[in-house]
Length: 349
Image (cartoon, rainbow, N blue to C red; front, side):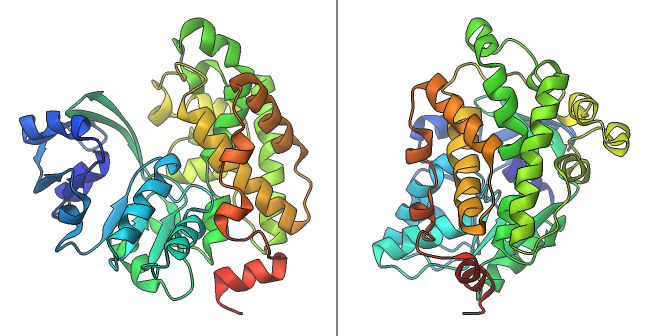
């Protein structure tokens, strides 16, 4: 909904699709999306609201996927069945999004369309009612990349979001995923608080205590080491968040992770997860730490903090987040070494 508002305000014709008819019905009834926050207050008309995916993509120039990583498998499979050749922009790609989509299309025997991915969602937004959205932040800069030969999708991504800065490859964008470092430490260490209050506290303000901030810093060091193994020197989490616009600039400049996160205005009013079934657990572990660990194994980097967080989250949630997450096999990279993976994402092979 935030993307539909932003793109419409900037002159693009948007057709909105969702696999849930119940989600779309209030929007059909309202015929608009009401919005408030960083883009002002108002309402935008929607060119089309579609539950039928074939109808949604007919005549379109680009498919924009602004969904949790948990939905990617379904959407990619559905587009593969339709033989979609339109460029696809994953906003965001999370960690390994383009590789995952490539694997899904290959599994169906359908040639993949051009696919580009952004490192981080370009909005901080929450639905306040079924037909309205509060947009508390719009990213100042994110990273964008595509697989070799998919430059058309990357061009589309930059046209739609000029804040998307080109990255060398999709390993850089995947490893710049803010949420896989930002959410797991607080989600694990605040699990009892989440269950006791059903998330009745401010996650980024109340849950990022000094101890949690130290754990975030250790996890971030592992992410940066994996990135270096693939030839990427990426910004630290707090510098990345400052560039996106979700961290307090003074705290970031001082290197104070806890202060920078807690005082970031875009996230300041966001509540904690209401249960251990929230996407901060299912997505940011299974589709954040799991692919990070897959890349770490290929790179030969020990990531003990990421392993420990994943194991504790599996025990607390009672779910096999590692096995059900975005594993090396689901990414299509299980038989590759470091050089082979670099060749795949940069087209050297």
